[in-house]
Amino acid sequence: MTRTLLSIVALSLTLAGQQTLDRSKIPPPGKLPVLRVPTWTKTTIDNGADLIVSEKHDLPLVSFTITIVGGADQFESAGKRGVASVTASMLNEGTRTRDGEALSNALQLLGTSISVSVGSETGSIGFVSTTGKFPQTLDILADMLVNPTFPADALERLRGQRLVALEQAKAQPNAIAGRVYPRVLYGASHPFGQPITETTVKAITRDDVVAFHKAFFQPGRAVVTVVGDVSAAAVKTTIEHALAAWPKGGEKPAFTYPSLPPPSSMTIYLVDKPGAAQSTFAIGNPGPPRNTPDYYSLQVMNTILGGMFQSRLNANIREEKGYSYGVNSGFAYGKGPGAFRAGGDIVSAKSDAALVEFMKELRGIGGSRPVTDDELSMAKDSLIQRLPAQFASVQGINGAITTLWTQTLPGDYYQQYGAKIGAVTKEDVVRVAKQYIDLDHLAIVIVGDRASIEAPLKATGIAPIVVTDIEGNRSGS
Image (cartoon, rainbow, N blue to C red; front, side, top):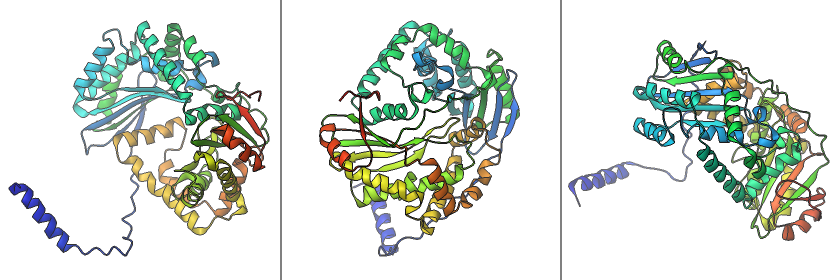
């Protein structure tokens, strides 16, 4: 044994002898996290994009993101679903000055990477770098954004990868539920009910990719967010120089979604997955947009119902009954009517019993089982105390600030959050549960072994059963 190791062992034994830990007592809680919301400046750069800069000089790091308002639901057609994600991936495949390999090598030398994504309502391109490598990394990002070449061979490779992923998803119950659930909620004519399919991916051409890039990535609907070890004044000059070739243009989309289909009476939509050891549940209905005045009450209500480990759903179905490794619930907030969903993976033999418990808790949060003072306090504490963690890193700060812009929230949103959550009452919880969880029109999607679970589910009498295929189309049997 070396002298260094002997010293470590001796020190450990000394410290152990000095500690008197009473394991019969629960340790006291640590200090509550303190919310420190950073400041930022907001201007506009030459091409019309908004610029938000928050200086943070404790570490030599910079988080840079260009966020585009609007996404696949606003810029894709139903027959070309997937072109948004394909275009995002192809920005890494080469520019007029660098092919894909050269881009990758250049970023590796800088010790960073550039991520590009286009979601349903927003898109982004960005990176985190050291302060010293920020200008060089920004120049590469600008090249990718303005000068992509979209090579045909890369498109075919990416198409093949997506087709393989779609085929593999057919064997994954969670992926199947993720396709069927929006379809039964929104229908095939609503953007929320239109998934990416093999047919839509095969239909994408290089011209579609070029057209999507030109229409989508425009500064008039963009915000550039910079957080870290920079000077607000100096970084604006750097950004304007790097993005000088990104021409003006673009407006924020209106986010006018079509009307929802009339709600159906509560129905169980059963998707057969022969031999499945577990059943995947997705239960809910269309919900409100992010700008609902009931947002804070909904946050507290959902936290009690299924938004934390100690929630009613998890305490019942996982901890007490042992039917699952974990269940939860949540709202998909955005500009449109994102879904409320409760669910999880359930032991196949307990599918019927678990459904009974799901329904009991969904009814209970609406008033049949009153919310206790302890539940209300725990939910509020959970929401308020997790907020400071959003500002612990340059990436977190960047995301928090960008959210204000994309969701049109007030500048003092985070400062007011604790008070707004704290003002929620038990009556508010019951009211929003009744209003936004429509017990008479719930869609209950269950992906599992039909042969073993259909009869027990039917015996519960909770709702009629409709059998669908993995796309949500009703089966003939």
